[in-house]
Image 1 (tube, one colour):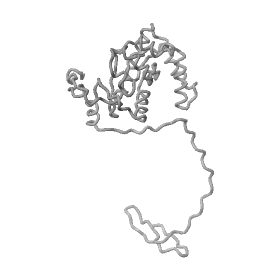
Image 2 (cartoon, rainbow, N blue to C red; image 1 turned 120 degrees about the vertical axis):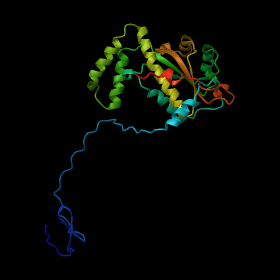
Image 3 (cartoon, rainbow, N blue to C red; image 1 turned 90 degrees about the horizontal axis):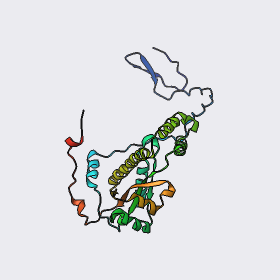
Image 4 (cartoon, one colour; image 1 turned 90 degrees about the vertical axis):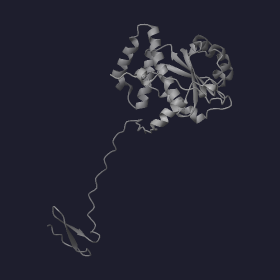
Length: 271
């Protein structure tokens, strides 16, 4: 047992037995301790710029499947209903955040807001009413020039987003540049770019369903005519498909049709 000498004004120590030893405690405030010698504070650790701490939010399995069952390729939109700006901004971000191989995102999404342009596109879309009646209309286009200049651009974007020097990305940049230079033809490059673009379209359609926004993907378009109407060639873009977004009309009979999908046994293969 360790004895402690009481100072003036300090209550007697009360010894509390414990399994290991007797611990002495005072029943009044202890005398003030000597102030520790001042130490200069450590300089704050350098933090890498633009770090982020993503927050994960989840929905229930039932809610997810429910929304995917709710969605369908809307054939008739209500022209009077418009998507709120905040909701559309979220849909834009969903498409922007879609994954792409090497992070190259070799595409652009053209948001057609001009009513006259949408009217001009309709004859080149099998006269589908979604082109003009939906709240928003987006054309997904691949880049026709996927070259070192585009690699340089994406590397600058990556360096800025991660707060690092461009030189630190040299090994990664070399690998990406080698991949782009490895295409044996423009057709092969176009096919690869199209695959990346379809992933962005899929993410957009899923995000729309989760936000309760109706959508209709349209492959039934004349890409060359779309390029001509929208002036995409000058932008080094080539239209591939479109997505109409908005809210279904109350009398769209397709909304009540049962969703027909392959059974799990035909869809999934477990090995």
